[in-house]
Length: 128
Image 1: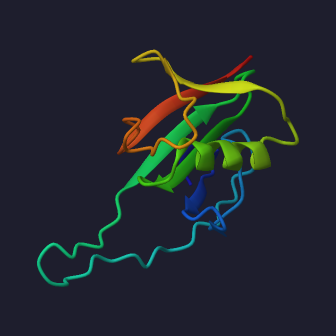
Image 2 (image 1 turned 180 degrees about the vertical axis):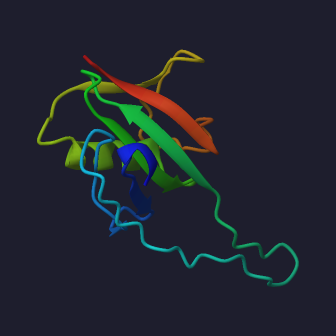
């Protein structure tokens, strides 16, 4: 949409990709499927509302910025898997980091919510 920014939308499990990876500097075509997730009004304590997070992640060289929407219960490993798949064939060792607070997200089993990345976060990749 605005400013030529495309977004890649994902829902966990990772096999349920909703769109491909696109960089902010990529094409302006945005195929954003509509989400049909609606809260259930079940019995007491039966809330099925799933929190999501919007992550903006800069590549190591700063040339790409990924805008990714994930469910809060996705893991750092799910995010890493997505990045590995959509970084233009780049593989290798990298850290997923935040500038403030300065932190590396290395525990692949940690949920995005537990990592403090909900409802949104700006991250960057640093080569190791």
